[in-house]
Image 1 (tube, rainbow, N blue to C red):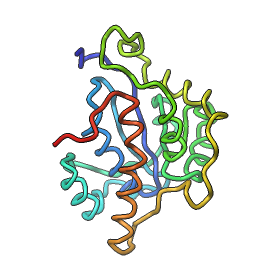
Image 2 (cartoon, rainbow, N blue to C red):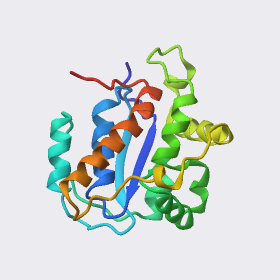
Image 3 (tube, helix red, strand yellow):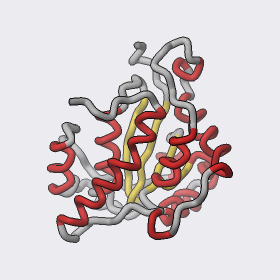
Image 4 (cartoon, rainbow, N blue to C red):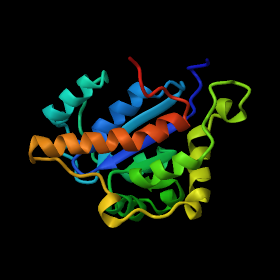
Length: 199
């Protein structure tokens, strides 16, 4: 596999960039085996320079994902312009992103929405003969393809569309958040030809 080939950039967005988005960023980084996909995160009202919540760190370690050397970042229009796919913790975050950078509208999704779309999209083969596998704009192509599938997916209920925010809340809410992200990222991981169970 050519791991030097840059196939695109996934940006994950939440509010403070200390709970939901770092968990999703590091989980996906540990699970996606297709080389060349950059994954990062930022917050709409970030606690700039802060480490991730220690409870998030513990959940990532349990998942055998890297929880080291993290610093929260404030979301900027420049970050959005550089991203090929933007995944947001909530529908409100998606609205914020599109207001900040209207050109991203076709490649910005709530994570729950993209998860549903990923379930019905053909997965990316780890076989170099799959044309998408060697495409430098792979992530962007997948994002645009997902946008075309939107009409084929029934919208989720309001209560089921957003990832719960565990910031300064009970540990049970942290567990609920992690369980939500675990479930929602699995179709994405499978779409990109990653491995869910790395035991």
